[in-house]
Amino acid sequence: MKHLAAAVLCAVFATSASADGHLPDLAGKDVVIVTENAYPPLQFIEPGTGNAIGWEYDAITEIAARININVTYENISWDAMIPAVSDGQYDMGMTGITIRDDRKEQVDFSDAYMRSEMVMMVRGDEDRFTDAASFAANDDLLMAAQPGTTPFYVGVYDVLDGDEANPRIVKFETFGAGVAALRAGDVDLVLTDGTAGNGYVSASDGALKIVGEKLGTEDFGFIFPKGSDLVEPMNAAIADMKADGTLDALNKKWFLDYKLGG
Image 1 (cartoon, rainbow, N blue to C red):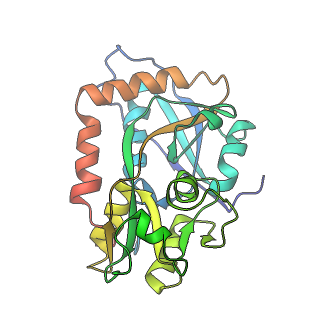
Image 2: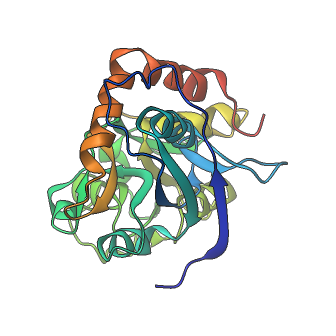
């Protein structure tokens, strides 16, 4: 599997106060994590600095300190990620991946670290539709989506007619490209989980907005090759971070305090 980028980012973590013996100690185990860096605010390249940052990076920093692992990051496209992790090319994958039964046939998931709901993101001046039904009723309107993602399937089956080849779905390789097409007027709707959608809207200075009712609930998890011995320690760390308020603090930092592009 070819990588989209060959650059490798390394992180060395200090010992956390939470690493007091009640969590597994993996003795500095090397863990290679693959990500897309295209799903703000979970993980993305910061404009102006070129640094890879986001909620998931901060979460992994905490997890690494708590269970004593040494993490290396690599980058890959979304459509290649699950097959590559399934094949054992990487120890773990992260990019806001929805926990689904069909994906569990290829990879193991961690416990959910976040729950989100699907929303409809449109241009700030959009007035031709206000919900899924009015979008579906207008054959002139187009939707951006990444094939194989939860927004793609929600768009196909919950908004449109269930035809995955429907020409009203314009396919893009990355989520960011779909958002750029929306802003440029090439498509009229992007479906996304509320976390990413709210991040884009808050950074858009009125150019984007959310319309309609939420279309569903999804849980995000990290992925691993089947049978990975990392799943149990990761789950222990996630539970620890839920219990001590760390996950709530990350949510506040990235979804309330951080301004994309700001």
